[in-house]
Every structure is written in C-alpha cells, then in structure tokens.
Image 1: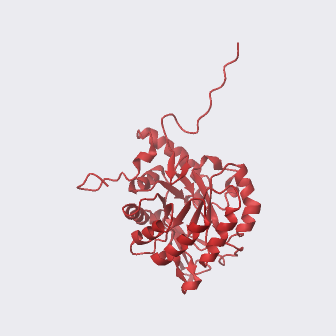
Image 2: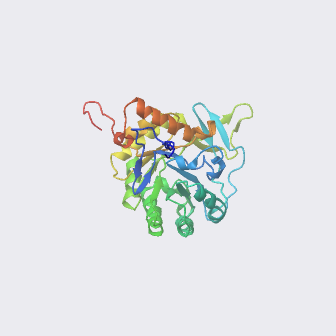
Length: 323
C-alpha cells in the first residue's frame, strides 16, 4: 500500500483570492515593489521570495550609466523621507547583461522603469529591452526634464506626456505603464493624455518636491538641495489623485504612496486602484513587501473578503451610496 503523500502548501489561505489584473498582465497579488526602493531586485533576493510578489519594478534605466546626485541622498522627515538619488543606474545594457538573467532564474515578475531626457532616450531604452526576455511590462517615468523643451517635466504638461507615451507605445510590444507626476493642478488631464496615447495602466504618483534644512549649519540636508518626499505623509494626498484619476480613465491604476499596512492597501483599492506599489516601507523593513502580503491575506480572511479585486472602486460617497 502506498504511503500517503504530504499535502501541498498553498501560498494563499483557502478562500482568499488575491489575484488582480493590470490590463493584460495578470498578477498573483496586488503588491508591487516600487522603483528606486528595491534596487534591481537581486539585492533583496536573499531575504524575500521575489516570486511571491505581484511584481517588482527595477530602479530607473537610462541608455547610458548615470552617477546620480551628490551625497547625502536621503533625509528622514516626520512621517516620511526625502530622497535625491539622481536616477543613478548602471544603464540598460548592463542591466540586461548582469541583472536580468538572475531575475529570470528566480521567476520574478519584472517591470522595467524607463526614463530619459529626450523622447529618443525613452525609445532607445525600450528598444534594447524589447530584444530580451524576462520583462513583463515597462513603467515610463515621465517626471524627468525634457531638455528639448527647456527642461519642463514631461509629466506636468499633457501635451508632452502624450508625445512621450505615443513614442514609447510605438516602440513597445509589452504593456506600458505610465508613472504620473503629482505636481499638476488636475491629474485627470495628464491621466487622459497618457490613456489616449496608448498607456495600458497608470502609476499614481511619483514623489513630491521637498526641502529639508539643517538649522545648525543652515544648509540643505541633501547634496542636491531639494528632493522628493515619500512615505505616510503623502498617502492622503496621493489617494485623492488615485480617486480623481479613476473617475476619468478606464485603464487600471496602481496606487503608490505611504503604504505600510494591509488597510493602506485596501484603502487605495477602494479609491480605484487595481494594485499598489510599496516603496519607503522597504527602507524601514527590507522584508516589508512580503510581510505585507502575509498581513493582507489575514486581513481578507478576518474581514470576509474572498476576492480582493472586488473591492476596487468601492468607496461610498456621502449621499449617493456609491463611488
């Protein structure tokens, strides 16, 4: 008589379905490691099972290597942090040769963050990535200065946003996510520009311009003077942007800003997000993304939520009983 076989171990508690869809990309859960906070992913592989995450976004890739901003680059603030890394990276060719093979071996769902100072820079990075395997989607960082238009950020002008997204769409066969800037009066205008130009999803939003001063030496706490604010302090502001964009766009939204707990994740989903990205929390706890996954599973069980995607856009507006 054959000996009984051990029961298989599920990564999800029975009855809880954390799967979400971001356009055509199917993710096993809504937790994504944010660009710039997770390195190239390989750095976290010894302590996190990359295959468990919904996805991970590698730090921004440019055509050529970039040295980044002068130190110091990070400053802790009340309820958050300000950073000025300066988009330091090894360049897209080195990423493909040195980092991507190991990410493939670990079955990670990899999203490549792409940036440039000209439209041709964005297109050039995408074309190199198109010739390789192991990338699930692209995340277009449009919070970069366009040197061909006087240094204005692509992401603060709907016309410039449309131009760079349109060019990237022509070059890319894979899903195209557009990471919007929060530094606009009406997020719906840039959201609509990105959607109408070929974006498959929106990431809302990048960091907020900030300044930290040392009162003793009267200097900035950062080497590049100003930086970008992230962390819990920005969560209510960014959640409003997610909510407003969800009312004017039909493509999926990925919320990003101040996520530290499972309720933070659920709140973003209720506001209209399909998935979320975890950033600053990984500086506090390098295992934050995987820990949040475990906690989200338990939250869904405790609150009798068998399918998390059903919560999307479920916020009830006073007086209407609906979103």
